[in-house]
Length: 400
Image (cartoon, rainbow, N blue to C red; front, side):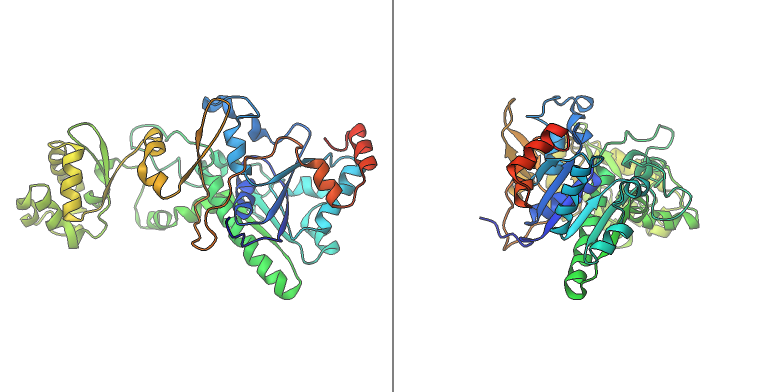
């Protein structure tokens, strides 16, 4: 039995896709009660399976389950009087409200922060935005493909010069935003417990992208322009090389001046360490391609198994550039609890755990995301609705 640090904390989520649900998924893992509100059609992430070669099956919706594990799920029609009544009764009992609806939509429904905080000053209100609270794009819709990866500087820079931008994958920016939002929500919650005053916590995909790339964005002011080729890395001990058996490895030796002689000796080229063109980062950075060619030739001379033994014995940092299939089979992932194994109709599947580990709390349970409207009746009964009222609301289309 795991310890639930956030037991007693209640959160209402009105959000779709990934970023905001990722934040509440973290908090649910840590013990908070999260009630996810969906429209009658459900969160669109329930239906994204086919574009990733996964099933279109609500009993095997891994994309939905991952973002919504350990939550309760209800369906409310917020355009109906009774649906909105239920929503406000939920808010009366919650500590946080988390959404990714744009501000105009929230204002139209009368559930924006300014309105809700007047009724419930202690409310912690969390919102994922595309581009931020201010500026010319504040009302523009944004996904992690666009606001994070494209405008935030990732796909425009992080690819091999002379090729096309890297194939973007969904969720990379969203999950970063989810962690940031969860952190902000907890800080605001602690303050609300002390002062009785909540806050509006926002995280934008755009800002999160810039934050992640900050060192490189800062360096662009000094002429460090991307995209580049892997051969153009100013520190040739910080790029990728291919082995004799055609496996790409990543070197990570940022302290060039301290380790270049040891590295070059390790790969069997000690004479290069005596060459003044390579004897410091300041010198090698004038023509990194030359040393890159020497290292490329050396690395191609041995297999991954051979290099693993050599680099490990020399205590030099490197890693295999693994495929997703290799990650799923990686013993390090399983032994360090990166994955849980969940049963699905087609068989057991590896499902990623959220990445924060606690010694005392142990591993959280991993309950699949709720079926559409699975907990509607239970939740409404818990906030004071009668069976007769619930039946009438179903008949009227207020709930499902």
